[in-house]
Amino acid sequence: MIKRKGNSPVAGEQLVIPIDVDLTFQTGVKKKAFEGTKSADLYRPLIEKIRVIDGFNPRIKTRKYRLGIEKLARDMVRSGFDETQTLTVFLIYENEHHIICLHDGHRRLEAVFLANQYLAAEGKPRIERVPVTITEKNDSKSLNIGVVRRNDKEPLTVLEKAILARRLNTVDGMSPEEIAVEMQDSEGELTPYYIEGLLLLAGAERGIHEIVAEDKISGTEAIKQIRKHKANALSFLQRATDGKEHVRPRDLPGALVKRVTKKIAPRLVTAVRELEADPAYDQLKEETRLKIKDLMDRLSDAEKKDPPLTEDNPGATSAANPEATGKAKK
Image 1 (tube, helix red, strand yellow):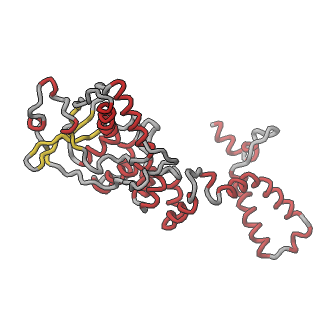
Image 2 (cartoon, rainbow, N blue to C red; image 1 turned 90 degrees about the horizontal axis):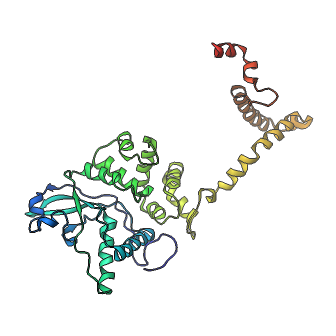
């Protein structure tokens, strides 16, 4: 394995972002696809007989991805292929041939081929066949939704989820609301707003995809910046991540000022109120005084609607509005 920092691709290798893929097929016949296979190996085809459709797997082959494949391959060299973890395939008919195509298990199948290289080097028997489960549906929508549901063991990244959301939306005609239902995972229910963010990320410029794929910034933070900076998002993210392996939200330009402003805000309010009471306050320009008044009026309105509770007067809200107290008791 080639050692390198960050999550960038191997030197000289272009990062592939599989945004779009054609999933229009004619259904194949099971008996024909497994023709010539012994009954004992009916659902254990030769690994060379399993076609991997280019671009179908939304996973992006970053450094982290390749390290995962390496680990799987080494495990297979030591313990063999885990027969309980079957690959999922679907059948297509193409050029008068019935073909077995991989639906789920791309990482495991790739690891098998790598493991066979190590096994050959050690003079050991290679893994020739793997167990498969056949899914009957091979339409685009079913295949894409199937990928969402079958990747819980190694969760998809935000960018990979965005790729699937885009396919479900643009190719399969699903709304953000429908996609949210299908894509909800162990983290809980997803909202249409979250899906709209994924669609924004998937539709962003390739430069943003590369920044996220290389883990220079999280996919979630990239979506926030796309919403905020719109057409200038790429420029902002390039400047923010230039020369850095990973940038946290707290390290983005302007984040420190925002944190400090939030921290000192109560003292600023106190200082402004003291300024208003100062005899010299009237010497300020009228324009300046009007700006201060506008800000303080907005704060006062908020305090009236949401008065803070104090230890001395925990029932301040009720005392200030006795009618509300009576209604609450009813």
